[in-house]
Image 1: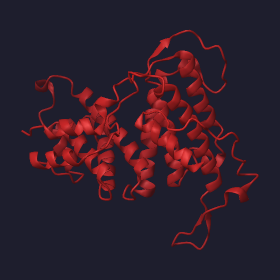
Image 2: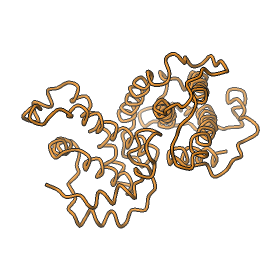
Image 3: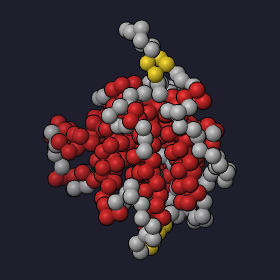
Length: 326
């Protein structure tokens, strides 16, 4: 089950059909009733002799149940689109988001948003809100009403009106993760989440600065005085710090951090570097990095509506290698 769970998550984030069609035929037992089936992992912190349960059984079952839904979602949106486009009926959208919301609502109390503390629990919520953000941006090709009624999801408020709510929840949990655990422990899933957060913040900054340059504030200090851009920039700095910390352990997040800096202007890049280490690479370094990158990870994919291939890291790195610095 663990291998299927991992495969479902990776295929979803890579936006590719799952390699196996078979899902488990029987659900996992209730961890409250069958705790011995799962076992338990306890931790003890240096300042206390008390053993603290990590709630392994509840988290493992929730993770596997979510993986089944991700497998179904991946099959629905990526397996049947030969041109890599993603379009679906409002019924399919409603059904998918309703199933995910039902999973979220059924989480045990110890995994509720007020009680999550361990990395595995926080990442479980990050995964949920990531999927809901992306699904709410999928265009629908059939606006007819769904034929089934699902009690867990309000169609009148879905999907686009809820995107902002999902995004706020996602950003909040990333901040909680940093405050509790930091970003230095290597974790591929956190790299995925931090990449998403960084590029969403870059897009929001570009929107704020879409006014003509001669109408913008004349200095970085004036720009920082804008509470809207200040909030967006702080989120971008947090994501960039996470990618940089992760990049101390493996290559992918280090490369993504360079791509983030390459997507902002020199003034913004300078502000980010005041808080996060990250020297601008010269042409030779960019070319060398591009030559050694063999990754199909879709780095800057804002939604399912975009061409996946254009945002694969291999292609982005070729653009990065050809950039010139002023």
